[in-house]
Image (cartoon, rainbow, N blue to C red; front, side, top):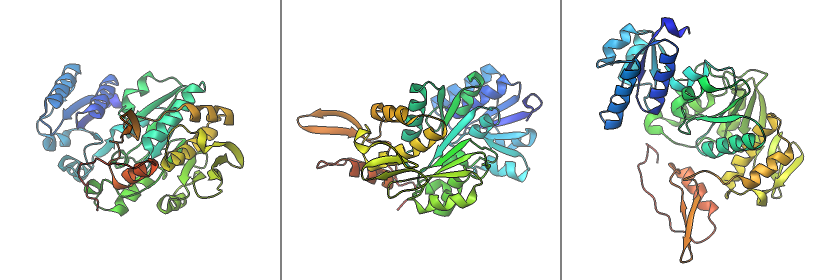
Length: 354
């Protein structure tokens, strides 16, 4: 797309929408902005966009007829009334994530899955930066891709966490390494059924070519079947047995027959985090890191906030914050990782799950 000759309607003006708007304006595009929300933060974002040159839109259903492309923020579903109207008019619909990916030639590692995305991405990013590479986290970690592409250098690696919301609007995105960790029921209030949710996760793989890599969980049947949907070279990881990739055997982690480390050397606790480490090892080996470099980073990586995060011990009781467990499978894995007698405090809403 030659942006200077095009007009866009950006729908959703939280962080991703703001960054998409800023990027488009920096490239000389004509940009209209709209958000259904009426919160003070949305009003502030709309005002800031207007000051930078965007045009406020009060009737997006009408405005969509007069723009070339609709840009959806991740929080806006593809069945939003404006998106439906755009489809009727044969307009191009693109997400903020794919918009950004179209304008970078940097190496991209992309990770999706129901659980473990942020930990896996953070571990990969941590290991790369500690080993002398230049790596940047983007995507569903709270850092919109479009906020980083203009400042990147040729040698930079983007490590992208990709959610099912972002995958709804993926059509051409093809990372050098795509990783699918697991698929269990989640977000069915938005995606309607499990079949559609699984399909969205598999979209990360469909554009890969023979020169690229798909890192897949051999133990997850839904993920295992995705190998049939990609032309990329498949590298497996498994907690249960030897595979062509990273695997666990007698409490030791191997990569293609070479011993990497003992499970005891991994700082983050729980079998789910061993699984995340296996996936990360596959990616890091494909990027050229040595076994010693990977071992040192596994020993020192302390995990991420809100994921079985140790807060303190008081009067003999240890408190953990696991507020990022937002579905049943994630919560189950977190509880299993704590070996002492445990009191679980939880709440939230069901997202259409059982």
